[in-house]
Amino acid sequence: MNALNGKRALVTGGSRGIGAAIALALADKGADVAITYERSGDRAAAVARSIEEKGRKGVAIQADGADPKAIESSVRDAVGALGGLDILVNNAGIGRAGSVADISLEDIQALLDVNVRAPLLYAKAVIPHLKEGGRIITIGSSLAERVPFPGMTAYAMTKSALLAFTRGLSRELGPRNITANLVLPGAIDTEMNPADGPMADVVRSMVALGRYGQPEEIAAAVVFLASPAASLVTGAIISVDAGANA
Ligand code: NAP
Image 1 (tube, rainbow, N blue to C red):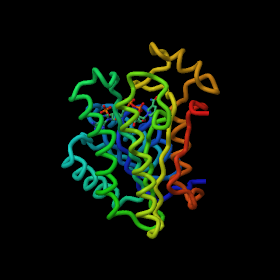
Image 2: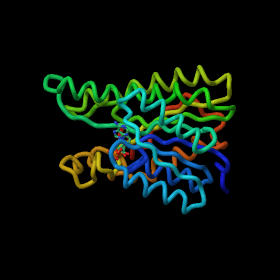
Image 3: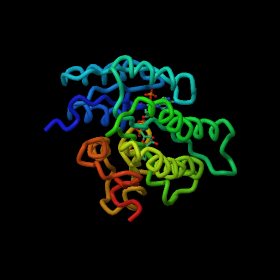
Image 4: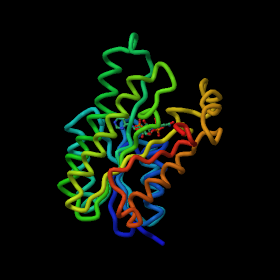
């Protein structure tokens, strides 16, 4: 069943990794999808083409999430291309490792801009376009709840800010019957965190299922939250993390 027929979604950071899987999964369920990217124009265009091959509208928009003006114009472009918006997926994010003692001011600023300020500004720009039944879904991290690795403190801190963001947003939008939810992925095999990376065996040894997740396993949770089946779910923090925080 195409639960998302007629819906229009904007997915930030949809050129690769988890965001690309989310964009394709939403299109599989019937949604037209605009994606943003920062640098990977060719890959974003390929994702948009794959969406079109599914018979949906697919649009790729260059927009640096660290730039508030780019956020506003990308929402305008998405609304113009799709004729409106029903679903926002705040997925784009960056990782920067470094202990609190060593991390640079530049890395701290980039983490705050892309991982914290951008989801807030995207919501701010999209909310006026959402109607009853609208959805805001944000991608956090299992590190928002526990931080088992040194060197990830600043990143984890940006992701834990999204808990308050999601809970507060659910209260603000509930009266309009718009939901806001947060998905906390564990280690997912992408360029940000490859399953053959230097820490991968340690990560596997620490999670209940003993393996990395695939981007499609995060996309499945997002599709559920976007669908009418999740009509009563809001302000929820949903772990999809192989039991990382079990
Ligand atoms: P990824 O493979 O590195 O992909 C990142 C995506 O975000 C790309 O589409 C990238 O665009 C986009 N992006 C990065 N910086 C941007 C910026 N300044 N402006 C606009 N777009 C930007 O990452 P991923 O693993 O798929 O992660 C997706 C989300 O899941 C992130 O929020 C991440 O924190 C979260 N997460 C990932 C894991 C994991 O293990 N992989 C675990 C927990 C949470 P370009 O291609 O143009 O660079």
